[in-house]
Length: 154
Length: 154
DNA sequence: GCCATCGATGATATATTGTATCTCTTCCGC
DNA sequence: GCGGAAGAGATACAATATATCATCGATGGC
Image (cartoon, rainbow over all chains, first blue to last red; front, side, top):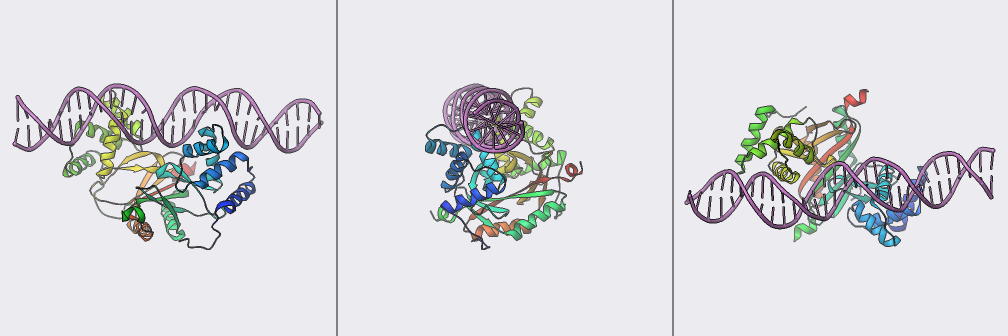
């Protein structure tokens, strides 16, 4: 599905790529941040900040408050380690934190499963349209709600 | 900006177009719905359900609860009288309720001003990409965050 | 080593957005 | 008018997000 040949990380590889990326930005890779990243990456669908807070609370054995999670998620989104799915108020780990794409999410309204595609030509067109309307620094949010193949079969 | 030549309604014209559209769908055009529509249309930026509840409360002279507003907004969105701006958790009136577009919102992160463009070729490409990935009944959500021309000039 | 400082996290409160449920009213076909 | 269905009100609550202040720990100057 990916149209380009960069590394698609998973598991430990993804985690170390994330750590590397974050530290390169001059940010710290703390235990808490690692725990939030692990939790985020362990979900197979977009997870809300509260879902993550709960998961981290479980693994840490103590209550982690939502605001800490929000702080870290915001940091991750800023550093391209994670993405926010606007139409779901949720977050997903970015599987290739080192390259910058405008990504397109396809979200199943039935099961919540979300797949992610990149189409730089498409997103470039949208950026261009925004620029034509006088918008600067445009950051496209492209999400498609629908029904995924599996749910459709039922 | 609109690439097509349909009627762009405003004021009373918009209101009657909305009423006509809703009644054609077999729904009622009640006083409450009219009041919500008026409030929605009177905002010059996306308004949250609570903003609208407050506005309607003022004009009605009594407290209108949010859930009533949500109900009506959901109905409006379903009938194409209004759109939800996902990345802002807010709603805007649709200025041409009689024709169906996948619309593209450009939202200024500074002032909140939102402009709306239609580009059927672009949205068709996105629908196609979703269909290729096995998604059916895809409803694109295309929003672009950035800075509008006016805020940029400052 | 000691302390000043700064970034990260914790604790807590609160704001904002969205639903559920039940009741009561109003509208419409008859 | 009557009865059923749709609309709206009241209330409670859940889910999402932010603000504020306190604390902790590492780091660097002295």
